[in-house]
Length: 462
Image (tube, rainbow, N blue to C red; front, side, top):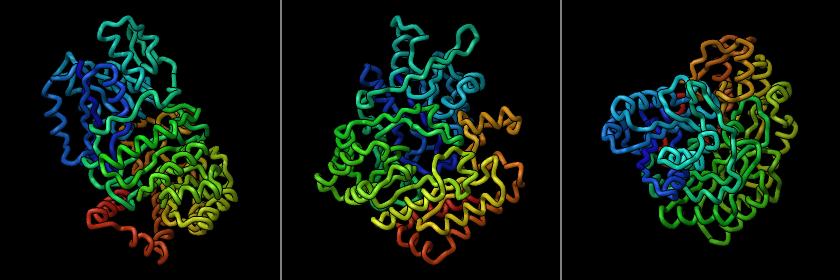
């Protein structure tokens, strides 16, 4: 049985952050370890286009087409699913990823797929394909499967993978970092080639705007130090990787993992850079961890600050105060030279203009180097989105229009025009300062990098 794993998004679809596809890489390893033939078609690699995807699908040399679906890529995935059904009707179609995890029933209702998975699919997809190959495996026992039974949509219980080492490393030969354009997460990097890696899954926090726990669960599960260093050594020696973007939400949650990985890097004497573009939890940082991260090559941390309004932080259930934010950010800049990016959300449903002004004020008072002001996005699966739908405040919500550049909800206390003005005010007041401008100019690597930054800025205000 041959499986074609697909990310249908391409550079044409306005992708701005591009790194090797870890999700499909892990799935490929699991399938190959169980005797299945696998190919990955990742649309954001160099030279890929939508036409090339349809050319590949026309070959009909695959038995299963598995699509990775983000909320942002629902439309592209649906077009490709329909194409598979029309050109290779005998092929089994499967979807997985963040969108079906957050909206499982809706995904099965409105997308042309035979099966779907929510959460992790490394084990469940193997079970499903074995069942379809003739093994006596009940559909009800397949991990995380979404399926149809006489027209009814069935959601099997979520079963997070407890031993992450057991699924092996991603199939890096199929997602070679050198096959991807220079477009680092967070816009900036220090060394090249670079790639992203993941060392933990799960999040114990209850932020109302986030749907992470619908995909990975609430328990933080970490890989072993040995597994992480083995992967880094492979990437360093075989693929020449010199910067690792660790994309975990909770790498610093497990102190023994941080210490083990950092000490392993230091012992090896690697001249590498580490960055955390998706952010770390401020509460997990202390002087020991920060100094060790810097010695291991860490030069950049994303920080999930979210708001400068105590009321908004409470409504978000962020479980941190403004005073704690100030204390931890000042600690980073007191004991290290690590550059920091503050992540802020504006336009949370309960916010007023005054709340957003407090956020802008805090962003300028903190000794951070960059800031990202995201207009609050109702993603499927989050508590905030569920509440808005239940209250009738999200009517005819088209998930296919959702991206971090989209504005799909505006708080009742303001207009769309006012919200856009506040975002523009935030960016202008933060970035149009000599210290910030000079800092950014020193980080631009080359002409390609400069063009990439311009594309990001353009999309922010388009």
